[in-house]
Image 1 (cartoon, rainbow, N blue to C red):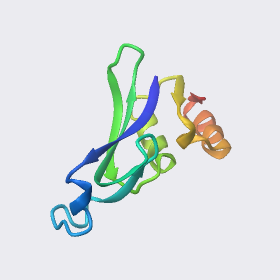
Image 2: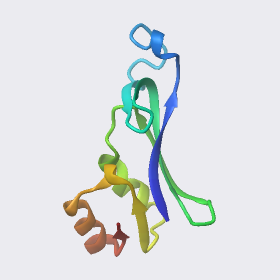
Image 3: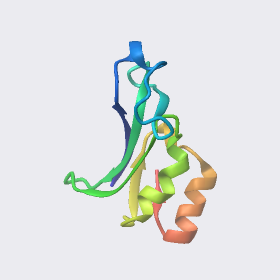
Image 4: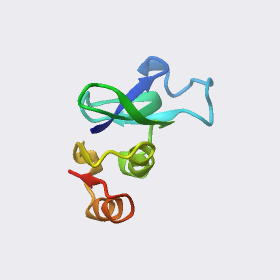
Length: 105
């Protein structure tokens, strides 16, 4: 399975400092791959090699990937998971293996 996150932009970046919709739910985050700040939410998703979703969490845009990685990967545990460098943490890898027998690379 593969674990990653993607931005859900709710408005244009020119209006992100004055938008009032979703106040308290959405906020400003940074998408490193696009090198832009955005206002909205973030979708954290785990999919199989066939593209079937196994687990997901929707958070505010500023939420770091490591904070929800365990929640996403333990909804329907898969024995082998791949993640990008936003998930790098020896502590997280050890905890997932010991508690859920999930190998995380």
